[in-house]
Image (cartoon, rainbow, N blue to C red):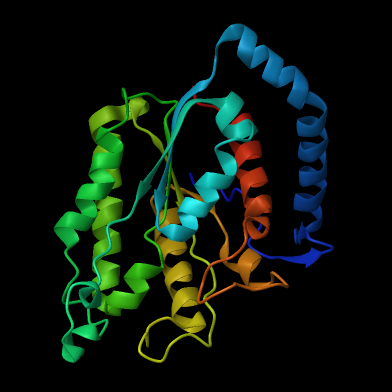
Length: 263
């Protein structure tokens, strides 16, 4: 059973992101917002009194995901919902950082190592202080996979990732972490020519593919692509946004985890 934490589409109005829903979904969202807004202070007090916080929140990804984590670590989600919040930076190796040879400066995927990449994901799971049904991992491979890898290789790697999650679920049963797949943002089309894979079309295709397959495996989805694509200010470089662009995603994650049943 998969769940969308937020609407796939929406638009910005005065720095507020308005999500687009069907009539029934919009009505349900209004009720949910009202309940959350009314009960947030009471719920926080109850959590503190009963010491019933969730256990660990792990945010895994690249520099964009790091910015997302840096924004939430001092907010309600990390201060009151979880005992511990951490981030894990995805492994990325770019040849040109270690070579002055011109022919080594291409993003050709030859410097990418799946074993090391997946080791970072397994370490993120193994580093949890203890297995619990109240652990949550928000994960995204990041823009670096699009920069470096051919499409066929990307798909194969993603299926390996889904198989790994299935293995964790089978191994730990109800004590397996809750995995949430986070989509990537829209890159700036006017990026450097040598990064030939950093295109809006490729990012959009990657999101559609990964979300479709993640839903088939029962993962929950936190969708950022259209939120960033419609952000009026846009990225301040090739693909990085100010934290304001992802405040709605933070709120969606907070609401979802507050209302989610971890029993």
